[in-house]
Length: 102
Image (cartoon, rainbow, N blue to C red; front, side, top):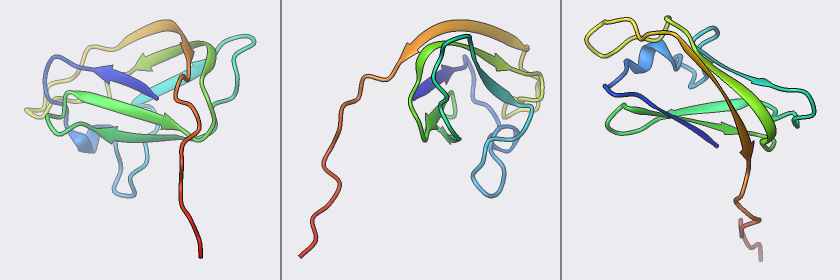
């Protein structure tokens, strides 16, 4: 999971579509050379709307470039300054119990 924190609340409609998917061109995660493929990203906005969490169907292991584009808007309609950052990510959550069937 990657968490992107903003200094103000962002408009959910500028990052998450009506089907719960990340809006194309709002935020991207690009795997660097040798990084694992993370699969599909699922976005979730925190209750205060200041943190966007991107959960992957695969795992993050390696160097990735996260880009926030000016398509992202604050709740009061201001454009978020586009930015890009490179980080090394490694998923650290181990296996967990899911269910039991009888």
